Length: 594
Ligand code: ADP
Image (cartoon, rainbow, N blue to C red; front, side, top):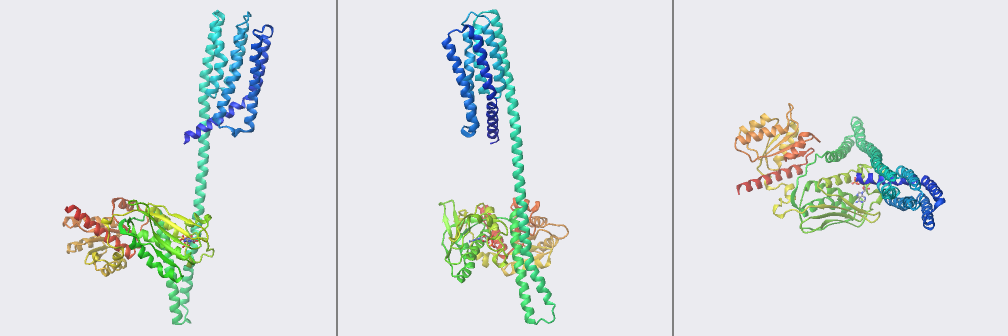
C-alpha cells in the first residue's frame, strides 16, 4: 500500500521534472540545429539526406513543444507513468537526429568535422544528463542515441586521434550513466521522505479529528446523562422535602412516598442501563453460551410485550421455529426485549413480527424484528446507535426512554459475534436483523422457562455463600432457600472452612469478589476448593460475584474459565448460571466415567 503510494508519488514528481525542462530543451535543440547546419554548410554531403534529417529534427522539436503545451492544458489526460513513457519516445526521436547525423561528418574529406560534431554531442549529452538523469527510461534512450553512434564511428575510423576521442567519449558515456544512477537514488529518497512526511501529516490530522469526535461524543454523553439523572433526583429531593410538611395529610404522604418510589425506580433503571453499557464497553460482560430452543426465548420475550402491543391495537406475531441455537440466552433476551419494546413504542398501527430466517442447514440463521411503525430516516440510521440519541424527544421526556437501548443492543450483538443490520424508511416501518449460530439438539439444556421458574435441579442442593456484607448474604441465602436449596452464608474464608469441617458438603460455592481484610473472592474460592479436594469432595461448582467493572484479576479469571457474575445480579441470571454449571459438571462427570 505504502509502496504503491510512493511509486505513484515518484512517477508524478518525475513527470513534473521531465516536462519542466522541455521549454529550455526546445531552444537548446534549435541552437544545436543552427550550429550543425552552419558547420556542414560549406561541404554538405548527400544534401537531400542531410536536409531530410534536419527537417525531421526541426519538426520533432516543434512537436515536442506541442506535447509540452498539451500536457500543461490537460495534465490528467494520461497517467504519470504514461506521460513519462511518452516523454522518453519524444526524447528518442529528438536525439536520434543529432546523434545519427554524425555519419555525415565521416562522409566528407574534412578531418575536423567529426571532432566538431562530437563536441556538440558531448554538450548535448550534458543537457540530457541534467534534464533526464532522474528517469532510467528517458535517460538511457536519449544518451545512447546521442553518444553511441559517435563512439562506434570514431572507433571504426582506425585513426589514432579519433580512437583517443572514442575512448574519452566512452569514458564520458560510462561516467554520466554512473552519475545518473546515484542522481536517481537521491531523487527517490527525497520523494520517499516527502511522501512519508505527507502520510504522517495526514494520519495526525485523522487522529486529531477522531479525538475531537470522541471528545464531542463524550461531552454529549455527559450532558445527556447528567440531565436524565438529575431529573428524577431533583424530583425526589422536592418530594422528600414535602414529607416534613406537618400540614400534609397521611393520604398525601402516601402519594408522595409512591412518587418517590417511582422516581427511585426510574433512577435505578437508568443507572443499570448506563452500567450495562459501561460493562459492555470495558469487556466485563461474560458470555455464557448454551444450546437452547429459540422458541422458548421467543415465547418468553413475546409474552412480556403482548399486553402492551394489544393495548395499542397492534398484532404481535411470533413465527414458530424448531431451531436450537447456541448462544447466551440472557444476553439474547436483552437484545430482543429492547428491539420489541422499541417496535411497540414506535408503531402506531399494523403489526410487529419476530422470527428466524434460516441461512442454511448448519450455519444458523438471522433473527428479525420487523414493525410497520414510523420508520427511521436514512440520515438518522447511524446516529440512533449513539448513546442518549433519540430522534424525536427534544424535551428528553424520560417516559419516552433515554436513547440507550440501541447502543446496548449493538454492543451485545457485537459481543455475541454478530452485526446488527437495520433497514428502514420513514412511514414504512423498520427491520432489525442479526445472526445466530445453530446449536446441537443433543446438547439441549432444560427448557429456559423451566429454569426461570425453578426446575428440579436446584431442589435440595447445598450452597455455600461467602460475602462480608450481612444484608447481601441474607438476601442471597433466602433467595436460594426459596428455590429449594440448602444455603449457608458465611462472612469470610475461615468461617467457610469451619462450615466444611462441620460436615457441610456444598454443591456450589458463591463468593463476593471484594471481602473484608483485603481478601478477595478468588482467594476464598481457592482455599475452599483445596479444602474440598483434601476431603475428596470435588463436585462443587464455584462462582464469583462482583461489582468491579474491569480489573486484571477478573480478566485472568475470565481466561481461566472461572465463571463471574456482575452485580446487580438478577435472580434469573444467577439461577440460570447455577443450573448451567451443575449441568456441565454432571456432563463432565458422565464423560470421565465412560
Ligand atoms: P429509546 O427507544 O430508549 O429512545 P433507543 O436507543 O432504543 O432508545 O432508540 C434510539 C432512537 O431510535 C429512538 O429514540 C427512536 O427515535 C429510534 N428508534 C428505535 N427503534 C425504532 C423503531 N423500531 N422504529 C422507529 N424508530 C426507532
